Length: 633
Image (cartoon, rainbow, N blue to C red):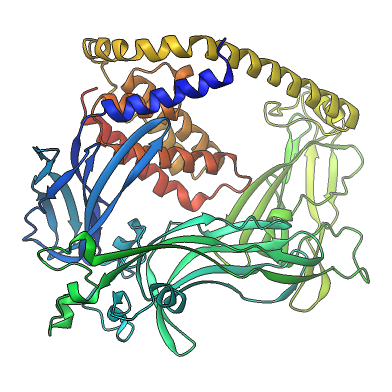
C-alpha cells in the first residue's frame, strides 16, 4: 500500500509522462456538420501536443464567406486523466449556397515538421432557419454575427480596438455586463415567475458560465439550458445598443412563502482587444465589420487579452402565502386554472371483468403538483392504485397540458352503479381566490359473470391498502433503517473497491501500453449492421419519455462497449476517452460523446425529464454512432 505522498508523486509522474509522450496531432473539424443555407458553422484547425507551432495555413474556402476569423486559442486541458496541450485557429463561415461540401486538407508546421489535416464534410440544406441557428454551436458571443445584417449596434466594431490612451479595464466595465431579469417581483406560492440571465456585450470575447444559479426554494423548469442557444438579439440599455445573449432562462415555482433570493450567475470572459496600430481600417466596413484579424494575420504583440469574471446582482422575490380563508378541504397545492372531466372505458361489463375510470385534469399552472383526486366509490366496488400519465408542454408559461389518471376497479355483484361527481380544487392567482371544478356523475351497469378470476393486470396495479410496499413505506422507522443499511453496505463496497484499485494502480499503468499494442492485433468485432439505437427509436416514436432516456443510455453504452472492446462493467468516461485516443479518434469527437452522455444522464435522473429534448438527443447519439462507425477500431 502506497502512502499519500507516494500516490501524489505517482500521479504527477503519470501526468508528466502523458504530456511528454503524447504525439503531435493536427486535425480539422466543423461544428455543426449540417446547417441551413442562412446558418453558420465553425471551422476549427487544432494542433495538439506540439512544443512550438510555427504556422497553420487556412484551407481554400472558395465556396464560403468568412464571417469571423482567424480566431486563435491555446491552452492545456485534462479530461478524464488525459492531458493535452493545444493551439487552434477557428473561422466562422457561411456557405454561398446549398450543397454537400468538402473542405480540403491544409498544412501546419510544428516542431520543425509539417503535418496535414483531415478533410471535413459539411452539408448545407436548402432551408432557412429564421434565427441564425448556426451560431448556436459557438462559445464566443460574437461568433454568430452576420456582417451583412442591418441590425448591428452603431459603431460597435470600434469597441474591441484598443486606442492609444485607452484603459482596457474601463472599456470592459463599460461594454460588457451580466443582468438578471424577472417578469414579476412578487407572486404566490406555486405561481410561476420567469428568471432570465443575460449577457450584454459590445466586445469580442469568449464567455463561459462558471456559476449556475441553484434556485433553492423553487421547483425549476428550464426554458433554455446554459450553452444550448447562443443566438443573439439587439437590445438598448442606458441609451446604448448591445448584443444580448441568454445565459439561462427558467420557469420557477416557489415552494414556500417569504423572501426567496435568486442567486447570481457568474460568467468568465476572455476579452480580446486589437491594438490600434495593428488594425487596417478599410473604407468598406461591410467587409471588415467585427473582424479582429486581417488577411495576413495579426501578430501576438498586436493582441491584448484580458480575463474578467462578471456576475449578475442577486434578486429577491417576495413570495406570498396562499390565503387560508375559504380554502377547500380537498385543496392539495394546485395553482393555476384547471378543468376536470371523467369517463369510464365501458359502461356495461360483468363481474368477471375489471372496470377503468379515467379522470383528466387539464389547464395551466404548476402541473407537477397536481395529484390524483379522491373518488367516492359505491358500496361493493373495490379500487386499486391509479396509473398517472403526464401530457405536459413545459415551454408555455405557466406550464400547460393535462394529467390522465386511470383508476382500475372491480365490482362484487351485478347491478347499476354510479360514481359521484369528482371535485378538484385549485388557487387562481389572477383572481386571488380558490376555485373548485366538478365532473358529471358517471353511471355504469354490471351483469353477473361466470365467477372466474377478474381480469386485472397485476404487473402494473397493486392494491393500495393491501400492498406490501405501501405498508412498508408507511412505516417511517422501517424506511430509515433500510436507508441506513443501504448506506453502510455502499460504504463497505466502496472501501473494498478503493483498496483493490489502489493495489493494482501501478500494475495497470505499467501494462497499459502493452495492452494497447496487443489491441491492434485483435480481430475487429463484427458490428450489428442494424441501428444499435433501434430500441430508443421505438420509445421516441411512442413518445415514452421515461423509457426513452433509460433505453438510450443503455443502448449507447452497449454500442460503445461492443465498438471499443471495453467490458460493460469497465465502461466509463475515462476508459472510453483513453481507448478513443489510442485509436486516433479526434479529441473533438471524444468531447462531443462526453457531453452527450452527461446530458442523457441529466435527463435520466432529473425529476422532470424533458420530452422536447428527445428528438435532438436521439439525433446527436445516432450521429455520433454513424461517425464512430467510420473508424476502424
